[in-house]
Length: 354
Ligand code: SF4
Image 1 (cartoon, rainbow, N blue to C red):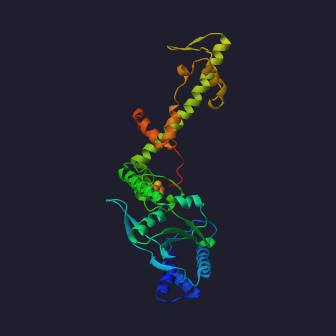
Image 2: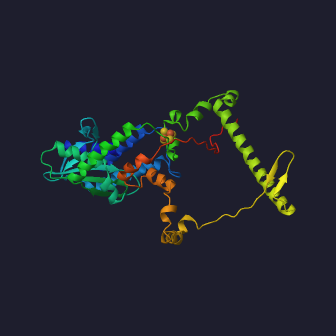
Image 3: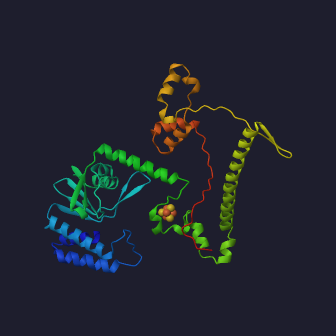
């Protein structure tokens, strides 16, 4: 799509207006040349032909909407510029089409082929085109306004946003901050989603690396792999523990029943004895139904003695960034970060049946 529209506007620079059929031929030619079997259609029930025709429809609607393409001057197509964010970082400025509409009114056009229309609020927060506008402001002397324009081709719709100078300065600062955060990161935990099925990093990804190592092994080597052996052993022991816990609970309950029936509070075994006692415990309303109880505790002046910070909730809020970053900074000296290793067993859907 991008290449077909680039060709259309490139020809216009040479005072050549492509006919719609020529644009579609150019697009179909590119489609034939670039299609390969590694391309996967994720959406069930649709095939290559559906997508090719969608492309034709998008281009046809666009062509009919904007022909004869004589609004403003095209200053750049698929630009390959850079803007300095600071002394260290540059941002690649790849504008699909840069236009000057009126004297000093610049337009950054971006083509989108997705099948959804974003909310205006999302576009007003979009970083990419806003950062491009920093480059426009720096490069051209007469800039009065920069308009950010997204063409949602599936809907034949333009969505527009603008930024103030203050917003751009803030965006520049926040982008540098985000880069610093990424560069100082030590941990790169795997984030497993449906998209992993098409990820090229699977052989080196911590989530799939072991699977890749063992799936090429012969059955004997496979069963002797230390990882395979450990997981199998761990799972067997877990099963045994589960069975034993159920058995233990049954015997415990029978022992209690026995003590009650015999009216004793100690039951003797060969060289061991079991004390069976009852004690009374207090149950209070659950956490989300304690308003009245809390009010009463406060009224009785006991709140300071009894109330405690819910550190579990606090940790959750910090992890989910639900607290203001200034608050998190102030709380930081009270936090001791510890790593806990967890082993969780689940069904292996990549089973190779050994
Ligand atoms: S397979 Fe790819 S996408 Fe999935 S977690 Fe690993 S690196 Fe990330």
